[in-house]
Length: 344
Image (cartoon, rainbow, N blue to C red; front, side, top):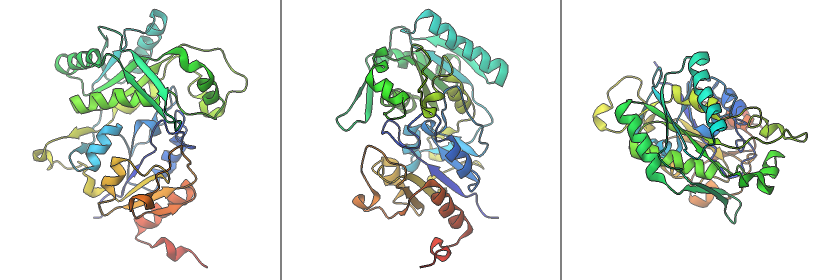
């Protein structure tokens, strides 16, 4: 019996990716790619679509820091049927907006049957700050990480949660020029950098799945709204896709003694990784380049950073589009050299 064909799809957040730079706009890609893989490992930036989501049964929703540890061989992934989810809400969220998020939790329980065991409010405001670097890449931080860690510790120790969703109140300053360009389909996701900081902190500390949904003030409808930004404008919260993703996110295996369970996934089982051609400097890709896996880079997914595989000495198959990349995966899975399908 052949082992499952396993691919990793990565599109880093906050770098202005042509595909994957908006909430959920890479979901169609993941849906198609999952059809040529037995297992597709990817991350929240690919699968989160704010109020919209799609259940891809053979996909694995893995936060970025966890993916890095998995690619390095330090952690493994253990698929689950469901997770006990806890929700952390930033104390800075206004009462009306807080109510909307609590109602979203109730709706996810009643409509989707998700096991959300508790929602707690941080003991002080998280103090989310955001910005954009000179290169245009999104960055961010939180002023009170201890408050976030205390809330998470309570959920983990008292409620025994297995995954955590965080809702931080983001500054309304993003509603300026940057926010306007983003809604017109021309900018960089202004919240991505801070979101990554929040989820990385919790995954590193508690070693369980985590994802973030920003709390933002609602804005009036726009006639010239880009379809790419529409998923983020149709609801009051970004939580639905996050809760769905966390409900079946694989648990992290952080000890060698747990390697024996059937179904566990380790880096040695990765057959291929797919990345934007200019975003090859991640620790994940550097780690996987040392393994026996096919690396496919896509020039058609342009980003604000330019770190190609060749500049790092990484051997990769470069293609122009994700449609072509999917063809490469299909050939690789079949054991066929893609060059055999080409003619001069």
